[in-house]
Length: 114
Image 1: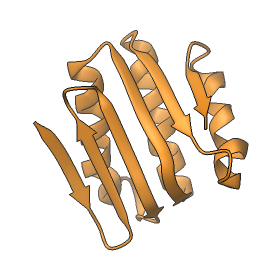
Image 2: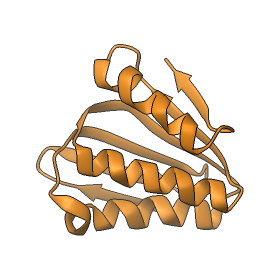
Image 3: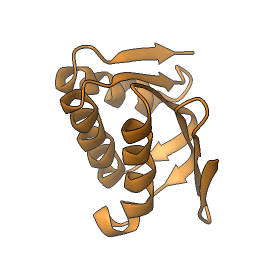
C-alpha cells in the first residue's frame, strides 16, 4: 500500500513495496508539528524495511525545519541499523551543500547524486 501526503507546494510519497520515500516540491512547513505527517512516513519506512531509499531529486527547497527532520531520521535509521540511501540531484544547489553533512551522522549512509 502506498502512502501519499500532498500540500499546496509539496508532496511526500512512500512506496511500501520498495521501501522508497519520495519528497518533492517546495517544503516550507513550520516546525515539527507541520512536519509530523512526513516524519511518520519516514519512520514507517524504516519500521517496515531494512533498506530504505529517500528520493529527493524532485525536492526544490527544504527549510531548516525540514533539514532537522531529515537529520533526526538519519539518526533513527542509524540506530536501527537500516541501510539508508539518499538520492539527490546535483542540479539543485542546496542538496549538494546540505545533504553531504548527513554522512557525519551516519557514515554508512549512501549519497547517490544523479
